[in-house]
Image 1: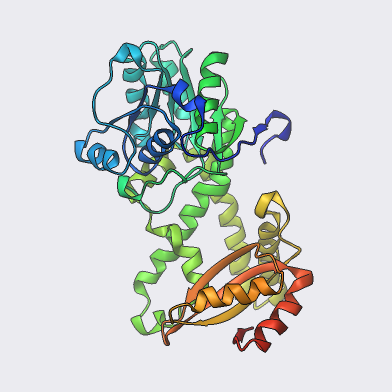
Image 2: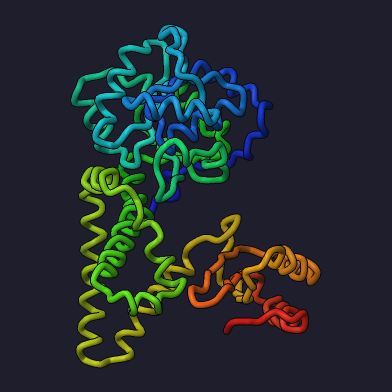
Length: 376
């Protein structure tokens, strides 16, 4: 758990296009690395009015990012650059940060690597002055990569960590402005607290998803026809870039290894209960999973324990989804969350809507009366 006494949070509202004077004050900005995150930073800053220059070892990536509105590939005057955002693979971060600090001598330099302690240690080993360096990490992304997947909305209402311990107050303030302009919610953590937290909520879940998906390689194709939304949910992030994740996981190996040992203990308990044919033992592990799900904050940080899910069958036809939403709206029910599962055997899908538990029964009755099929 993150030490709440050492955590400071600043909530920022999404930045409307072209209205934030902080964006202009940040520029010129150089973004090094025009993949999903780097190009999305460029898009968000450009939309808000900042001047952004893109660099990438693959010039084609920078050109594509520029083409979708992330900035320009025109090199800026180094002395004029005020902020450098390093968005390169983890293994390259220390070297690129060092070069940026030396080349852009008046700029604050931040990186968006998903592991912070190794970066800080590597930079200190190089005996650099870190007054202008502030490590950070936006908790945003997807299983996709490359500039074509970038969007200025990627960071809106997502957490963005600033790793404390380096940078002058002015340098930290500059990166806080970057976070605010991108519409993210700021959290300050020590590098160690950050690395432990991301191991718990990001890195180990990625490994578990990949391990589950890997077992599907040996499943007969006929058996895969039985796969429902559950296995798709569990394996969604298994499509992530293996090279990138290889670097992330090895960089955070100590924290991840500690978590995986606990997973191994739970797996051993489950195996022992299964082999002994003890339903109570199996149920104990499953119940602990329920408790973990309940611990996750829901929308606006609220608990999800007071929600219920209503699943409605939708025909694969034009206007069906709009008509369903209209019928739900007519009941005055607020949709807290939703997902869609596609039926591979017939032209239909299933919309799962999470609503307040006190409204679920009424919504089911109303949907049934309106002619919608319900799924238990």
